[in-house]
Image 1 (tube, helix red, strand yellow):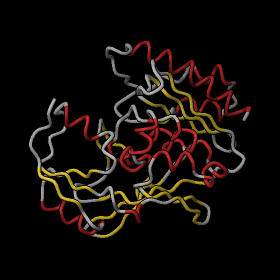
Image 2 (spheres, one colour):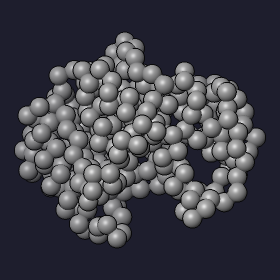
Image 3 (cartoon, one colour):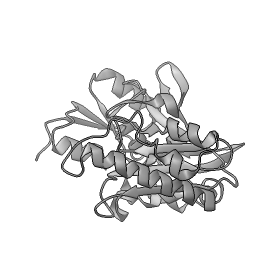
Length: 273
């Protein structure tokens, strides 16, 4: 299909992008376009204006900053996957980035765009949720930091304000923690039917992809592991509190059962890595 009519403006700075967003009630930011443009073609999204920030090179970086790694919101998935710093200090994130879509998507799509889109089937949101990442947003009233647990609010909705720009994502250095990211899909480039991110060592962290309106932490599984349950027993709690979609790819019940299988595998992988 052809998108509905829209205006277009290329921002030369974050400040200009914020100003343009504030002047149009339903303006949308365009970064890599790998999520927004397909939605526009299906007319699921009908912004009156696109504010193109894809050429703001100062928002593309990966660098150490004390105990965390700072990632610019416009860093391409390919660059996240290829980052030596992330490979050494937060390997689950670089691995998951390399599993996104196909090479074309990874060379065009950005980590910030994936997060801001708020798609519960996306890989990055659930991995960042497991990492307890922080998101830095800049708007007309300054800069604020949003915890990952508060960032994803509903289906394709986040805590970002209409006139805010996501500028940076901050993830902890996971050190010697074991990790795993497993997803099940029909083809390598498809969205995950269900995915699981797991971190072992310290407090267990388990998050789920495409099992509700937002990416979500498997709180019952984490609690069971903390109480000493084995992976098989803990994984039986994977579907608790979830509301998986029922669509042409898989039924809700199938996703619930699949979540239990993948959670067990992810926990075992994280324990052995």
